[in-house]
Image 1: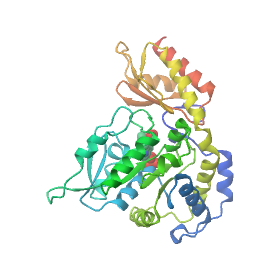
Image 2: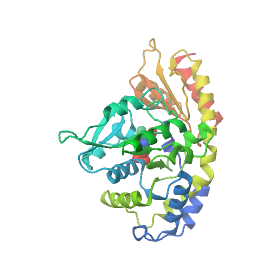
Image 3: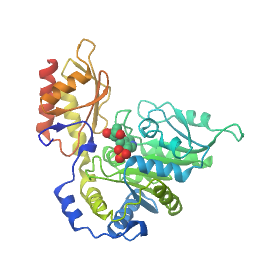
Length: 347
Ligand code: TLP
């Protein structure tokens, strides 16, 4: 796949040479006993960076979000989330399948936020006919809403609102380091006020595997139990955590470059009359766009033709694309992508 320009997702990033070296040299132990020094170090770093007491290394963003919901909620509890939330749409309904947790799906605003008035109206009153509202889940950056950024003020507002009503807040921060880079703030500004946050090491941060769930000591103890239920105790996981440490030390600070390239890509593509870019795209490292009405090809057909030109694009609907920049996409890749679209669709 090496010769392809792969814009399908930032999950396609491969470990850097420095990560591979750190993985080879990692000191390890049995993490189920808490004995893996490299996992422990990653967890300490993650807790510190996000402004929480403790952290837990998990296999994936999906596992982190699910362990968080299992730790916050009992069966019959309800989580309020956006109808475009990754947890609602793309995590195979795990919170209901495994947690018996009911979901209340509210509209996402175009910027990915959920209106406080909508949340207020959705909170259940105490009645045996109803599930018990327990948790609000946010997402930053918001994937389906365009990689959009939730502000520090909004995140704090939701946390304050929730805490006044005895509710907890979980943040799906799969790409919260992209949000922090876009805002130019330390990540803890976006994560410190919520009760728990999951962030992914294996997306723009380029580590091969893993996410970290952060929260209070007491919450992480519950999440640890949930991770065990999910089969997520990973033994000598230090070989993976070592790459995660490099990701936090070296890759978080360069994410802004991916945002600049996404802008250059969007500028180039906006000149193509066969494409209609979403208003405001890109907010971070994702360019969303549709085929213009007069294009007779489908998104799948265009993607096939792009593939023949060694460019892989994400198909996000019958006439829709998502293109994601990351550290393996350079300026030349951006230019080749713009040119390949021109060859297929004309200017
Ligand atoms: N997102 C993936 C696919 O699942 C669509 C991608 O290519 O964007 N939260 C958010 C906001 C995510 O975007 C993702 C993955 C996850 C959670 C789940 O992470 P993993 O794939 O590690 O389970």
